[in-house]
Image 1 (tube, rainbow, N blue to C red):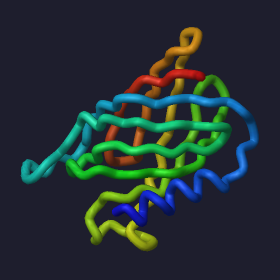
Image 2: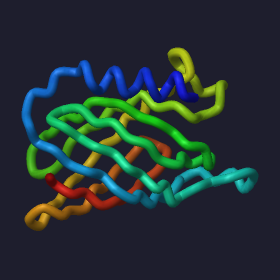
Image 3: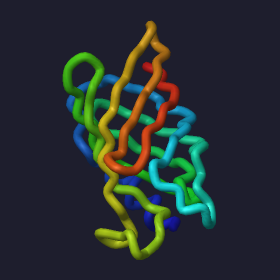
Length: 136
C-alpha cells in the first residue's frame, strides 16, 4: 500500500498543470445502487482531495471500508459539469486492472457560492454521491 501511495504522489507531482486553479474536495456521501447485504458497504467516505489545474490527488475510505489513494485527471465542461478519471488503490485484487490500481470514471457537477461549493458525482451503474468543494 505504501508503494502505491508513493507512485500516486510522484505521478501528481510530475503531471503538468495547465492552469493554477486549485480546489479542495472534502467529505463525501454516496448511495450505492447495488447492495449485497454482506460485508461492508461504506457510504461515508472521509474524502480529502486536492485539485490543481486539470489534475487531482487524494485519499478516502472506499465503499468496501478500505483506505484508497487516487490520482487522476479532471475534464471541465460547461455549466459546472465535468468528467474525472482516477487511478485508485485499495480495492480487492479481483478488480485490479493495472498493478494494484482500478480506474474509476465519474461524471461530476460543481456548484459554487463564492469559494464554497457542492460537488455531485455519478459513477456509472454504481453510485451517486455528494461532497464539499472549496476553491483556494
